[in-house]
Length: 73
Image (cartoon, rainbow, N blue to C red; front, side, top):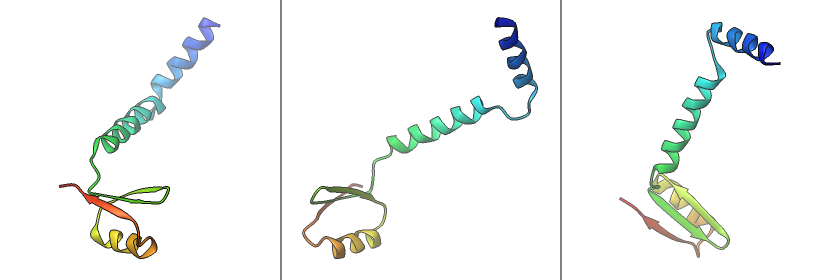
């Protein structure tokens, strides 16, 4: 079993693209996105939406006029 695993690992090392590297890059990007503070947080009944622009906020306020929002700078 160990010999077969080493053979597969050796074949993967020869390949140009490796899934492990792309997965590491993907996880790094996701962590950066989660660290960011959203510009606008809109809250309505049973709903929380993070927005980037005031135009998006206008649309959500039309849909939910009783909603509240906070702007972070």
